[in-house]
Length: 320
Figure 1 (cartoon, one colour):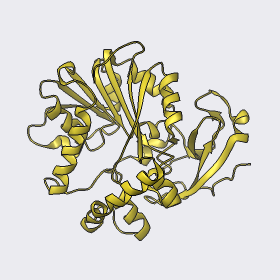
Figure 2 (cartoon, helix red, strand yellow):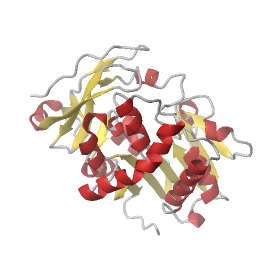
Figure 3 (cartoon, helix red, strand yellow):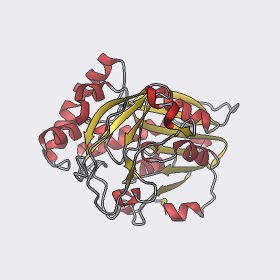
């Protein structure tokens, strides 16, 4: 029998509910519950909303937060604030330049430059990836979308040529894209299969959808336990393994090439373990210094902090 989390305190009108429907199978959880096991009981380190169970279904290979914020009220978790999970590296610092370089290299591997005329950074956050896309695909139109109505900080720079859409405006926008990037979005979605299918409908015939999420099977998740930043409850509603991410893309009607990648998390881990401010320069420097430890843990466990899916329409051959 699953262990229930202590009832979280409610702030900003956020309401919570316990999972009763299997997201992948779209049926009552009665048939799945015998396969559930509690992974950790993690605390909300950002706003002290309480403790939440991270539960893993051995049948679906999918983890989920229980209880989780309702679809109607989850927006309050992000309302009127800069996301603390976005990086706080000082603009134009050496660390900032290295991060930009690595982001551009990652994006350049996703699609041939001459095949990308219109691209989208879905769930752009601070806008870093969208700006990187303008440099990787200099002749392409670059769009970005997020839930906020205000312009993300990286898109406020002079000369930025990214077209930004709020979530509401994007629903009225019907552009098709050669490349859609959705980094660290799917774990926040209440209905991931539906979201991936909706994004697939925005792809051109040869278009590519790139998805990246934290890895529930990460060696760092095992090593740090309930303190692992990748759980990020209650904002992260689902927690993916490579098998469940592949299943989501399959049920959305896409073919996916699964992969693994790293996202620096040691600065966040230092802040969680010590109670220090995540935006502290000292914490960020320690994160960079300790990053080899993260890589060593993942190498030892033959795992990664994040998993990826490079998706396309069935039967379409896309050159790397």
